[in-house]
Image 1 (tube, rainbow, N blue to C red):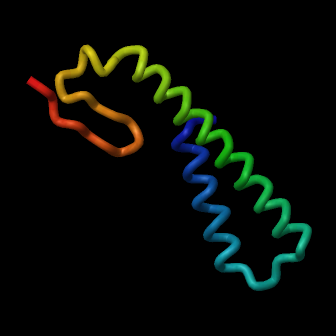
Image 2: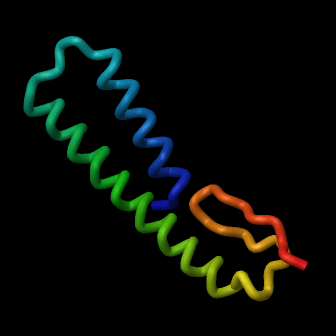
Length: 77
């Protein structure tokens, strides 16, 4: 399974849960567990991607000093 496939399945599960008023507790729990496993998979994929990117682009080599977690620092000259 790819990251994109997992995200699509999570979106399907959420939609199913939102649209179904008649799910049994067991069915609800099964879908919630599946979504949790898929989220864990996605988190691992993102962590692995981040490690690979850090191995390729280190702050010393990157003039824009890309900082993961959504921040960007300007280069010091």
